[in-house]
Image 1: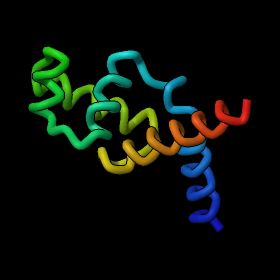
Image 2 (image 1 turned 180 degrees about the horizontal axis):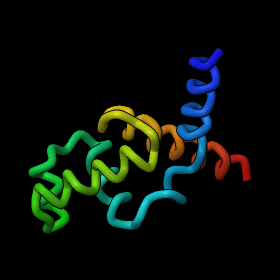
Image 3 (image 1 turned 60 degrees about the vertical axis):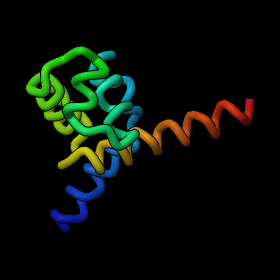
Length: 90
């Protein structure tokens, strides 16, 4: 029962709009990470240090309730798909 409740709570976190919880810089980092760029590539594109990119990614993982960049990208891209589907119905 406890596992079910925790899984449901985690799913609710994933379903919420990620853009509302992330800073503009975190969104930039997540956008590039979701395209498959490495930390070094993200740092170069955004004129950040690799350490800063890692810091932003850690904050993103915490805010989205995920464990890694793949899970973060999935949450981000699913939200974009949902938003695009909603906009096309207008």
